[in-house]
Image (cartoon, rainbow, N blue to C red; front, top):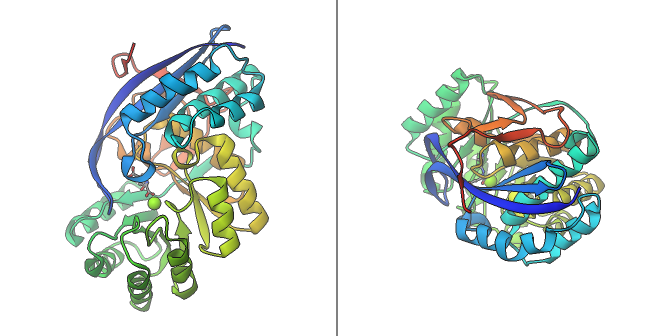
Length: 365
Ligand SMILES: C[C@H](N)C(=O)N[C@@H](CCC(=O)O)C(=O)O
Ligand SMILES: [Mg+2]
C-alpha cells in the first residue's frame, strides 16, 4: 500500500455555546483535515485543531508543516514500513505536534485497513466503550450553574469545570455548581495555568475545606513550571493532573520522576499522535501513574483516534473527549458512536472514518 497523495481541507463546526478557558474564548471548531491517499484506493483520515495558545500551532503552520515537510517525507513510501514511516514523520520537522498528530492518525488508519483490524485492537484492545466528562466554560457563577444543570439533563455525571481566570472568584464558581448539581456528580477542575503555585495551594485547600469534593485539578500553574507543579502536588489536598506541562514522552518521564503530578493528561495534539501517546502510556504504566485522555476543541476525526487509544490501554482511567458533543453538528461520517457521555469505538478496520459530509469540507487544492 503506497502513499500517493496528501490532500488537505478545512472544516468549520459551530459550538453549542462559546468555549471559554483561562487561555481563550472560541465559538466554533476550525480544523485542518488530512486525507492520505494510496495506490490501493484506501484513504486514511486525520484532523488537527489550531490551538495556538497551547501548542503554538496555527492553521497556517499546520498546513505549511504538512505541505512543505511531512508530505514530501511520506509520499512514495509503503504503509507496511510503519515503524520507518513513524520515525521519518517525527524527524522531518521539529515541534509541530498538531500537524504530526493529524498525519500519524491517518497512517494508523491505513495500517489498520491494510491488516483489516481496528486500531484499538492493534494497540491493546482493553475495552469497547468509554464514558466522557463534559466541560463547563468559565463564566459568571450563574451561567456556569445553568450550563452544569444543562449537562446533567443531558445525562453527564462528570463535569470538568474551567477556572483560573479570576482566581478570587473560583471558589464562588465551584460552590455555586456543587450546590446545584446532584451530590454524586463527579467534579474535576481545569485552571489552564491560571494560578501561581501559592495561589493554587490556597484556593485548592480552601475548596476542599468547603467540602466541594473535587476529583482533581488540571494544570494549576504555568506549563514550564515543573517545580511549581510539584510544589502544588506536595501541598494540595486535591490531586494534581499535568496537562500543558506534558507534551512529549520525555516531559511525562520528567514529571513522573520528579513526582510533580499525581496524574497525566495525554492529548494527541500535544505529543504528535498515537505513536508517541503509546510511549507516554508505557511510561505511566512503569511509574503506576494513571492517565486521562483529553482533546482540544476538535471534531470527530481526531477525537475518534483518541477513543481508539482510550479503548486500548487500561492505564487510561479518565476520559475528557467531549469535543464532538460540544459541537452543534457532526459532519464526520463513520468512527466512534457518541451518545452523549457514552462513546463506543468502531470495529471497522483502521479508525473507521468513512469521510466528511459533502459540502462540509473546503479542500485546499
Ligand atoms: C475540550 C476539552 N475538554 C478541553 O478542555 N481541552 C483543553 C483545552 C482545549 C482548547 O483550548 O481547545 C484542556 O485544557 O484540557
Ligand atoms: Mg486541560
